[in-house]
Image (cartoon, rainbow, N blue to C red):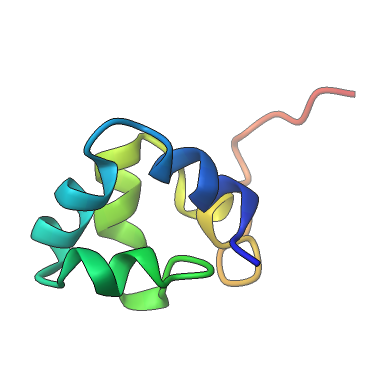
Length: 70
């Protein structure tokens, strides 16, 4: 099952095409992702506007300066 954040990104118009071009992959390869691979997190982050910790919370922690609403 695809990660919810990745699903949200992929629902955007031409997202798969833009991500695949930026990562140097085929659109078919990107469409098979269940979550963003570690080596492509920064690229997808820049394209999507999502922070790395939103894309892969298992790899990146929430920045210390970011306030968490109570």
